[in-house]
Image (cartoon, rainbow, N blue to C red; front, side, top):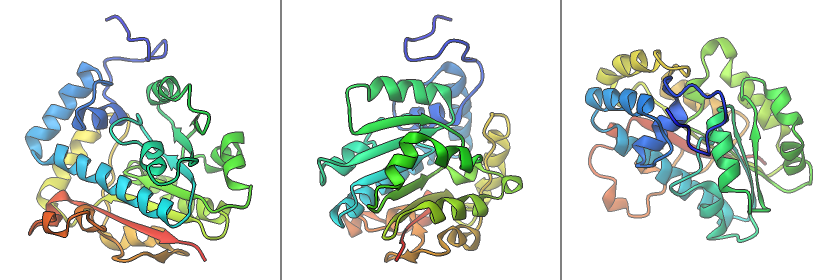
Length: 268
């Protein structure tokens, strides 16, 4: 198979990848047949998955714009995937044209494409690093520069922590990131929830175990604990469509069917 010019040499095109599957769910073109095949199986099990992914991206946009309107102009997006279909820099700059963004991902294809996409953007940078090695991530010059100049930073952990197993102690990782943030910073977080569609959770997690990025869905209490040390912004930790919707009438009677929960917290 001939590799597109945005794919780094040596990439295994036959192994499905969560970042590229997410791109497929959003309607993007930066994915391979192995990603599409696995994603189609997931949709057969759970037909609402593309809607859930779009609801997650819509939450990201609303949260970023909310924080930009509150004066935050620095964004650290960890687990950013491929920044297409309303990425952070576009959402933030609708409000704050000088917003700076550092994208972080551990997937070489996502990183390669992000760098190609953002090569002419002096206010955005891309780092290949792993959330599970938080000391290395925080030591990267791009990340260190964003965090140490005295202004608040929005830390984005959107649809990434459910790819961190309990053996890597995700709450400890988030606490380390929190402690590195300047005063007044924020946490934007979404996470796959066990409560929304418990009938689908087991099969969905089984499917992702066949990929290099297994999925760990968590309960609302465990997800809420990621906000320890932050003051939650209203309406708190809620289902994706319920977080400050553009049109409250569009939420519908069953927001739990979007299954992911989300919230925003602020440091003093």
